[in-house]
Length: 406
Image (cartoon, rainbow, N blue to C red; front, side, top):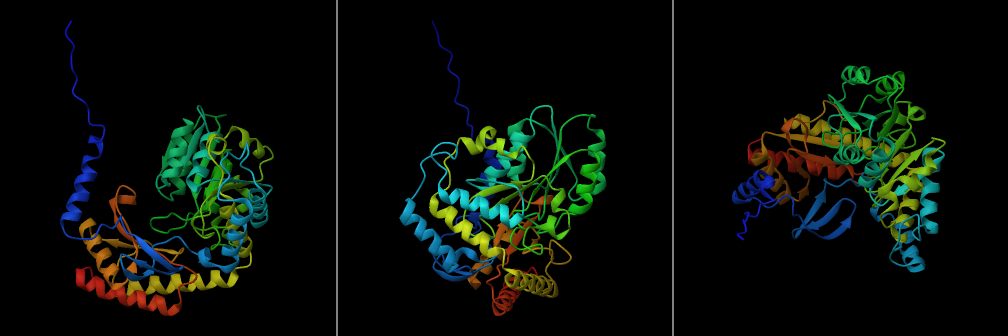
């Protein structure tokens, strides 16, 4: 009996184009922008990166809470009292006193009835979206939605109906076509992380409710900073009470790691038993939830920090515009200022020139970016001093001229 041998198929072949782009980039002589190492972190705004003292303008540390003395003390105390980890799921042995305390802090922060904490922000979207909207339901979402939102849609097997970015009319057209009586979840973001632009939530939520949809808003990039109490864009636009689910993360303004969902829905607590990414993963370590709870409670009274972060955002945006850079928004809308590059090669060269100046920013490239743009994404921090912002502008001017972008 003869056996037919089949050649092994290369399951990595689908990544060949990306492999080639990366090889071409490194062959040009630039440092790998996706392998930066921080040898020592000095503060929320400075670190030793690849051996250089560097200003950090590419972290999500919007409110600068990572080195807050009260936050660090809370983490150390919890580490001493409860150990390094829970070694279990929230529905088994993984709910410690600190998990309840951080959920209490979230309920108070948002003035909502329910709060559910996940091990990452990614898992929050994955779990909530996939559990709420399943087969036979419809999810209407912005085409520029975060990867965790798209993955939550795929996991839940709902019908996914995308619409043009921030286009209210396009969103309504999609809602009109959905069969009457179908379950609908509209998913929006307060701040979109690539360009730093804000959604017209007030108008969009009104349209969603007109068609009987539930609304989920991801406030990852606005929580702690935007709105009178730092509750995000929905609060700022006066529509927080009309949002069914708010998703957020601890890895931005809160300054640690983890994710959450808050809601006023009367049946929300059942999610703890039916949401697979919550049930089937280990809970956050006690030191992490202690730092998060302390940070969240301090963010309730951080009006001065919010005001200073807005000053930083306005100054950086105006300064880069005056220098001749092309930006992702015509005016500052958030703590993110995106600088549009001509192409990936120029973007990588500019990223490296800034790093040599002593400035770290994010190099963002397709397919993560909208409209195939290459971006240098600047994420400001409330702990950046006014003098640091002026220093940053000088670095952009010198690097931009050296690379030939301005």
